[in-house]
Length: 146
Image 1 (cartoon, one colour):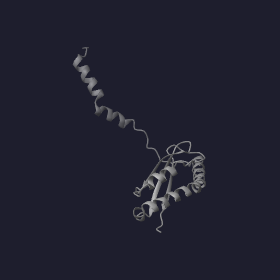
Image 2 (cartoon, rainbow, N blue to C red):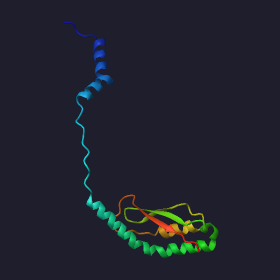
Image 3 (cartoon, rainbow, N blue to C red):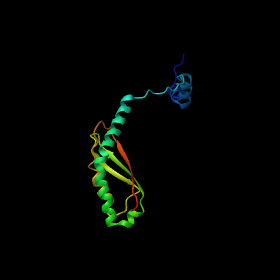
């Protein structure tokens, strides 16, 4: 019996490592298809979200006087800019401890001093209860014309 040469050994190695050989192997060893099963609802998460919403509802009335004061100051300083705004969406980002870290406004508030005043007022937000990472509180402010 003849001994295989280095060239034939290299050729056998290349054939074994080729993508076609790997495809052939994966076709033979394909796992059965998985059936999608619905995930059970995590009741702890639902309870936590309800508790967070309830504590936000309790914290909101304490913030309303400061928000109202900021809007009235902006009406006194720059009534023309504030007259064009009817609705503002506010997002208050919270930390794990429930403290406000960032406040964003949509649309941006162009009235002089209004975004700074509202931002300072809402950054004092303190949410009690269990807070998820990267939690946010969404507020919709309706500004009524005078």
